[in-house]
Length: 155
Image: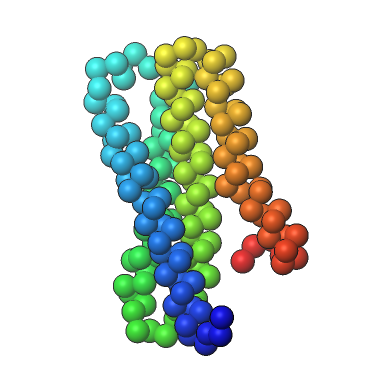
């Protein structure tokens, strides 16, 4: 496919934004749900460990939201500013940071719920493999493929 560098930038930015549009609603839903948890009746019975895990889940979900939404906000602010190449590279990195934060949020949320319902042993036996799976599928596997194909680690 013959495309100009401007067409390539437009296509790549559009592809990136489409990917972020998939993640944002789920992250926002999770964040909204976490905001309600402390007001639930059972929250008064959580341990200090569970409160700490909840805080990690809440903050990492917020960070994920910030990183996933940043490209759209910056796109609006940079509109017609001839900075699409900068926005594309920056937004790609924000997407990676958002995925890392989301992986921490998901793992923390599962750790919290399983610890609350079944105890620490079960919680760790579920959360650790989950964290390993997310790390492999979302981060390591694509990075290995990138290094093998392109010889570089990050875009």
